[in-house]
Amino acid sequence: MTDLISRVLARGTARASAGKEASRAPRESTWRLCMELSPLLRLLILTQLAFNVGFYAVLPFLAEHLGTAIGMAGWLVGFVLGLRTFSQQGLFVVGGWLVDRFGVRPVVLAGCVLRIAGFAWLGYAQASGAVIGAVLVIGFAAALFSPAVESEVARQAVVWEEDGHGPRTRVLALFSVAGQAGAFVGPLLGALLLAVDFRTACLAGAAVFVLVLAGHLWLMPQHIPGRVRVRERGGARALLRDRRFLALCCAYGTYLLAYNQLYLALPDEVQRATGSQAPLSWLFALSSVLVVFTQLPVTRWAGVRLDLRRSMAAGLLLIASGFAVVAVARPAGWTGIAGLLPAAGFVILLTVGQMLVVPAARAWVPDLAEEGRLGLYTGALSSVSGLIVLVGSAATGSLLDLGLPAAVPWLVLAAVPALAVALLPRRAQGAGATA
Image 1 (tube, rainbow, N blue to C red):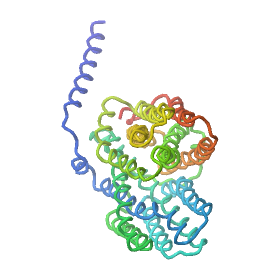
Image 2: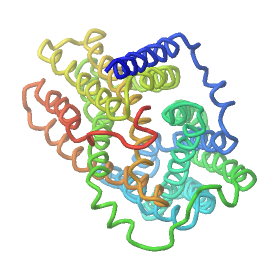
Image 3: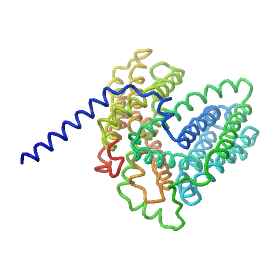
Image 4: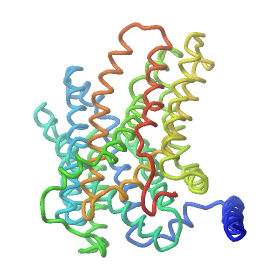
């Protein structure tokens, strides 16, 4: 009994000491973490930055171009944008399967070639059919290279963790930072290029992907050590029977549905409060800046105190509280600057929740995926979640149009991520269980 008490006390003292050391550790800089990573991880993270710079230099301005320069009807503009989303998110699972079958390098290279062709085609397209074709090519390109890059970053993050460098979530947090930095820089670049014309913005976006293609041709290894290619079939059936993975997809899908409200419910709230949607750009910038500058500290804090499940649960509850802030404030009917405060609170809480949910979800997938099928599972996470967003966004749009009391739609939206906490698998397995 004495020995047992001694072991328990020793374990508790060790944990307390580890927590104190982690809390006293110097703040980790993005540059320092980058230098600790392998050359392959640095390449993949810079790739994510470049992908988003090229993408967001063009796509935020597509709707206005289609409506004004080409003269498409509003319904057709919406249809084209929906096709792009479907050809990207909906086909991620196809891209993931191709990665498992043929490897990372050829799928990334094929995606880059298609994105270059798609942007160039879009820049010169004038007829509706040509625009639709270009948009489908652009979307399918992302369905190829994104699962390839994301799955390999997740796998390399696990290797990095197993080699004793620290939690895998730190690597995946840096990956998110790179993506948000690209999403912030891309529209600024696109706005400058639009001073010339939309075609110039498209060609500049294509040029970014030419650079990415050249970088991967030169630096990406033909075969990545430890990456197993799977030739036999049956992965999809096993995936669909994996209740724990599907539960993770559903929980992650509620986060994506909440994030989609930046483009659906938030513009409606900003319009009500100010009579204009101009403040939206500032709120979007606020979200990007928060991720770029605070993602790594938030992930480091979560890594000391939370496992993957608790990190996702905390993030989903923060997101729910963001909707609740607007719901509570709506009956007051505030306008002007005061009316924007609840919207800003929603954006901040949503973004902090995102910083907890996204690295944890990506870190969890390698523990659930079958051997050699990480690409398929990574793609399925996006595809299943995208289907949830598609159905949920249609329901949200109908909810906003019903003329219900002002707080009701926001309360319903708050309930969705809060209830999703119950969907999370009961415990994380493997090395990533403690982030």
